[in-house]
Image (cartoon, rainbow, N blue to C red; front, side, top):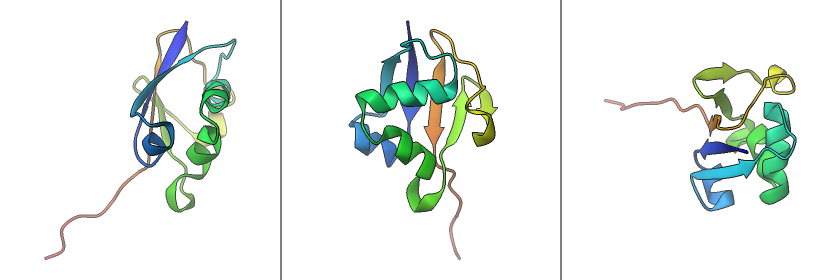
Length: 94
């Protein structure tokens, strides 16, 4: 039983891949899964929470946005996909 993390940069550089599968290990929430991932990839949780330039990553479980204040109660189950990426903005300047 596991959850797959789909991750963007710079977190992908930390773990060496842009997709990792992490055993549930008894975790039932997003926060619990971040902890499980941190046990396998030290620094994972800190990077997700801090993010580049002190911006936290956006978190989605499957297609559902999870706000940071809800990670301790947002449920996860076997087979879920957790997407982690930094918000980006910008565009061409003419």
